[in-house]
Image 1 (cartoon, rainbow over the protein chains, first blue to last red):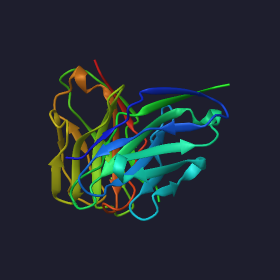
Image 2 (cartoon, rainbow over the protein chains, first blue to last red):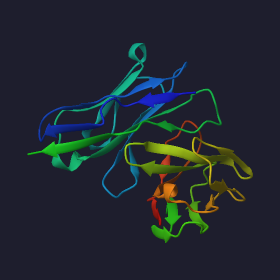
Image 3 (cartoon, each protein chain N blue to C red):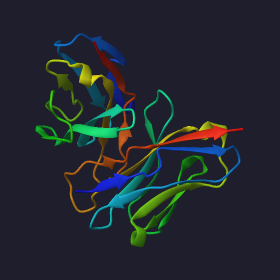
Image 4 (cartoon, chains in turn green, purple):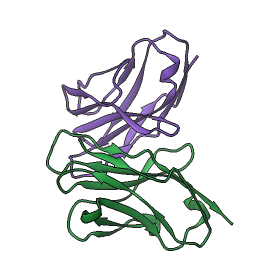
Length: 115
Length: 112
């Protein structure tokens, strides 16, 4: 079965600093990969997704992520963090060769932004 | 489109009570799922469905039942509520495997 690891439970960055959130997955074939964001008390919103093609994908709110097959990683980046980016971020993986398998989510990384 | 809707938003139950969390989507999505979210645990899959009449268990199915009689609706039933079921519950849907998953706003359930 596929699995997702987000090694960082909590990250604090200064406003304006760059950000990288790590995501590692376990899956034998090319996966479908997603990053979601959850603001306090809210549901989950899709930031970006990777299915195939260009390994650098652009998302909403200035986020991007890079799929690295050799490292089984799909790290999320943003060059300059805004205070409104404070939220919880979830990486998710889906199987590309199975029609019946739901997404598996990591445990999340909580991002705090300080002035 | 309303997207994925969930009712109620908040619910307090006593131990042993039963209830149904409602979930509906108006996007004609085949795939629907129920997750629970607990601090430090991320989202854990309870049950999912790949179409009307087809359901399967996820990671944490005990104490919950589901059915899928229509494409639009996917209710989650708590048979006999326990304090361990205190959580935030999210319903989600997607068109196919190669599409994004849309989430409802969640139901915050407290069992006393």
